[in-house]
Length: 332
Image (cartoon, rainbow, N blue to C red; front, side):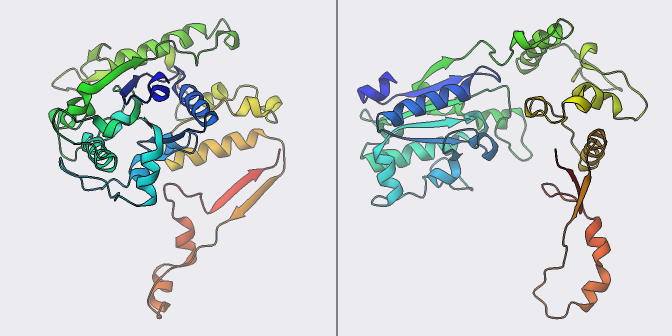
């Protein structure tokens, strides 16, 4: 905040892991700036992360960063445009989940801001990002930029820590995990709640014990602690449902109960099975809704396609991000 109020441009990196209150901190900073009638731009490397931020968007969308980018690229922002004028008046740029983004994207934004602000991009008068205040944030334990077919070295070379901009970064950190509220944890689960974050951090830091598995040539497998594993009951999903939604029959109307529980699974098939099982616990009338499926074609002759792809076949298809043909709901 001192950097913004003093008008001195600085580049900051907020190093944090999950549960340390970074989103709350971003919201507080943005609220304070806007109360002073200052302009800020809040972006993230992914759309999901951007939705958690006030007026958030992706960095590529906000700054018109090229998809095919190299070490000399700039953003598609020209002087005299509305976006360039907005960037000139901006007091702070917040970029969350920065480690996910290729370093060329940050370098392209820096060149663009230097051009807009009339600051040399090289030499003694050079100022990163044209002298703008930049707050980057993220956790290098999480996903780094993806290099198709690349190895560890290629991935590291795309990281912002390998960029010349990194030398100008002032490092900050958030440490305590405030997501763990001990008041809401009973004595039987306090061990798991306290130990699980430490285990996750150990994996990210490369300190978790590794082991061989099924004839692997090197120790590259991590054994999940026993206290995190539910006893198996054949192929039944019932144990995990009972664990995650214990007491659902008496609390299914409580929003506070439902919003703090979720079961994550990688396949749509398992999602449907879990949803159906959980829905069966709720003693309310089931309402079933069906999708309306049809072929979209530029051809005027669809008779052959109708034979090859009947409605029954279209109804059976399942795609990521789309609900099933048959959607069962209950009103509570």
